[in-house]
Image 1 (cartoon, rainbow, N blue to C red):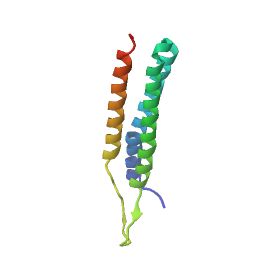
Image 2: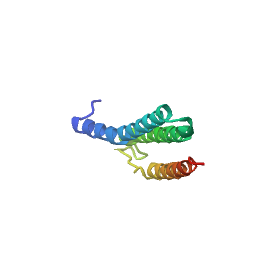
Image 3: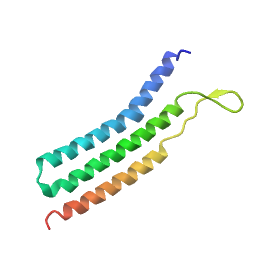
Image 4: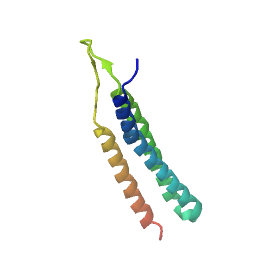
Amino acid sequence: MRTPSSELVEIRAAQRTFEGAYIRTSLSQFSFALIVLKIFTSEFYSIGALFAIYGAGILAASAFRRMQGNRQFFSEVGEDGLSRKRFRTSGNVVIVLTTLSVAAYVTLLVLTLRLGN
């Protein structure tokens, strides 16, 4: 069974959006963590570790979103025998990433304020 060209374009666009953005964000967090760990003194190691953990959380959300996307963008046969696509918005992932981001930035603020002590 061949996938029509228009559907392939839709699948590729969804992969760029749902997979690529999360992967790029996690890679940028890992890169920033590496820069902090390599350039700054040991008192900044906790900040570098924080960004590494934050990047790992985003990478985990990316893997979950990819798993959801693979199920959403391909047809499934319902109980009535009709083929249909199931789409679910990424609301749960957004809530998890918002919570993760707020926690990371609050922790960053606390770590930054403790640097002088």
